[in-house]
Amino acid sequence: MIDYSKGRYTVKETSGALVGRIDEDEFVRSGTSLLFRVDGDEFYTLNGVLIGFIENGIVTTPKGERRYSIIPE
Image (cartoon, rainbow, N blue to C red; front, side, top):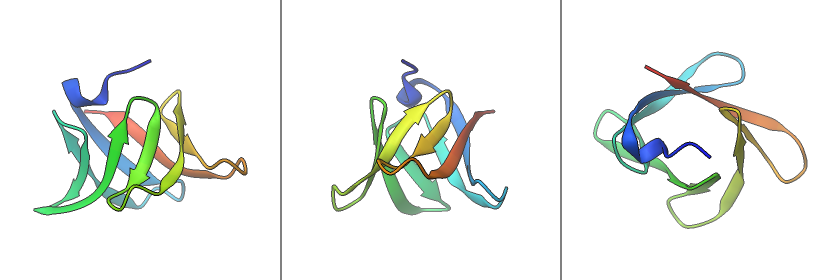
């Protein structure tokens, strides 16, 4: 399992559109706005709702839909 809080990553939608960045912590940000939280291999809204699981840099929902990619910078 990758510790995403230990590096810098770009988060994109599966369409390729930029969502935000992870900058050496557990949050996905767009500018100064917090968007999502990463906890181990789980991807959450800021309200604690599970969006999906991270496997090989891809966030996949519990229903199997690919939502985001997490790419090292």
